Image (cartoon, rainbow, N blue to C red; front, top):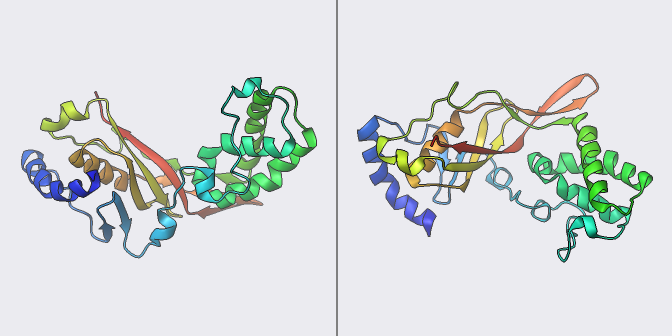
Amino acid sequence: MRRQLLVFLIPILLCGCIAERGLDLELPSGWVSNSQGRWWVSGVDTLEAFRDLETLQAMGIHMAEVIYDATRPLSEQYTVGEDRMIRYVKQSLLPLFRNQPEVVDSLFDSLVSPKIKKAGTSQDAAGDVARFKREGYRAIYRHFHEPRTVLKLGQDISVEIPDSLKMTAAGRAVSFQVYVSEEGTPLAIELLGGVQPTLDLIGLHTTMAMRWQPAYLLKGRKSIPIRAWVRFRIRFPG
């Protein structure tokens, strides 16, 4: 309902916003949008670009269906087997999996899972998860680097807020899921959490202007850039 309302409010809000501050919030040439908070470069595969990356299950990651025992803290649980520990460690690395699910899962299964099976588990399940998480991230990072921003908000990119919305924006944030190209430019942007229609659009245009060091695979001495996803958040000054 909120996103449907956004469609009707945008023209009205944009008129007031542009008149007040001279802001240009028109969709840039070559970009397409819909009423569901999604914007993408024309021609991009939207099924790929707008993947559900919220959970490992949604990504289709192998053995992701088992989670921690909800009845008690992990630190109080009994010794778990290696297969279950692998699932726990995958869950702990969820943010990394969101960057490139298939690549990270392949590296995890080839580099991390064997180490867990070889080392075995102890009676300290929480400690095991924390240790294998650190070791797993280091092992994967030797072969895969997630996207990193190369521009800074407020320095390289300014965030213009209409005077009439400064109180509404103060201290709040909009968040997006961004599909990043091999060149580090956004190919698709999905609104994950908004504040107010005009502020959401300001966040969108700001995100469009962002640039990343693209994700890349390390093969020998070569770095091969690949497409990947990032979660990007813009917090308005309060």
